[in-house]
Image (cartoon, rainbow, N blue to C red; front, side):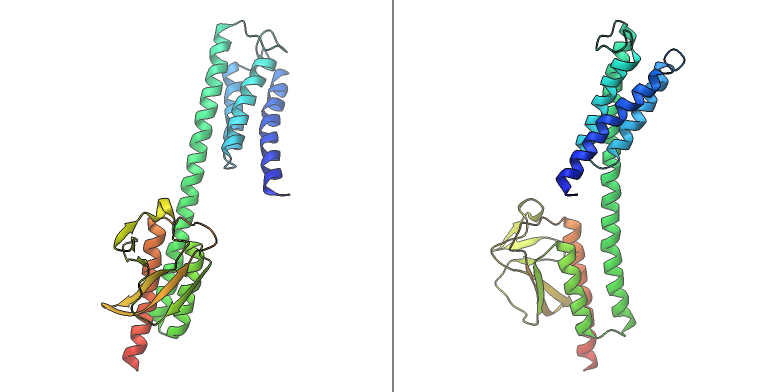
Length: 248
């Protein structure tokens, strides 16, 4: 199933499930308090929002309100509400459902962000461990960092060049990109697609080469954290090359 079809199915389920729940709750009408029914429906909205789809969360909130009106308020099986308390409850259900859905989405985004940050850290620590152990040749470390840079920054390609001077945009250790003497807001404009970007490989103030980063086929907008991790990864390659240079 393609992504569009999956999204459509998810939204369809987000509409159908609250209506089904309201229909089931209608069999206990008179014994199940409106507040209890509302809480059950809010849980349904949260479940829909937890999928990470804002349209699904909104659809669930709307369907819950419609189902509550149709199945659980007098007169039943109509979209008319005669009791002012039920009107207030229906409106609150919509507002609370939408708000809780947004909170659930925010929590999911924060979890995804934390997972990405952990992935960056794991990659950096893995490379640092290989350098510290000294059992991995500098060439292997350089290639390992190259592969990590491609994955981290979503690049088309990256390659190491031992040359120490280039007239290309340069990614600095603090995560800033300098092009023609001016900083570029990569998080907004993305990495340049019309030229390569150089990432210096340094250790102890000495430049041992550059990674040439290419993102030509699409615009990628890495975060400042990703750019800083990229610079730190390049420093690990610099450490490995410096160790080889001293040993030679």
